[in-house]
Length: 184
Ligand code: NI
View (spheres, rainbow, N blue to C red):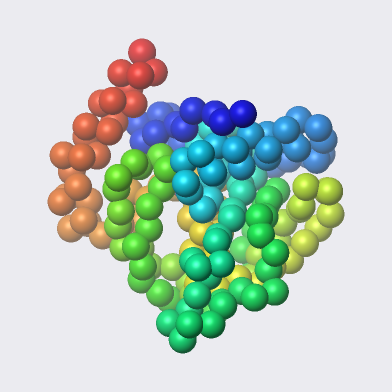
């Protein structure tokens, strides 16, 4: 079942997510609903807070065509999608960064260039409760950094340039207003 998305202005998006103590049926059911929601909204990543939950977890599914580097080669050929990241942590990254357009289901129709590490190493727990590591490049690396930000209450609006934030000022204000109105 697809869940409603919490949009910018909803205070839950500013909370720090809470570590998952045990990967039980509740967590597995939440992962399933998060995937259903992400696919329904045509996103490539979704954090629990975006569906009103505080578990420290997110889901990612980058389609093959989104995983192509500038040379036309797959950036993460060994990575099987989709992925569930529970209690994720970035444990390493290369120095090179990439500036690229980023969207977020909590900011409908808003896109901004954001600088992210091109490659990251992350540790997490999978849906079987097993510890995992991943080396990610390109869009997958970007998605991991974006979703991990959500779990710390950091949003797209905090990562965009000041100029862009000013340019989007009206749109952002309207979004907050709509969100508050819907919350009642
Ligand atoms: Ni997002």
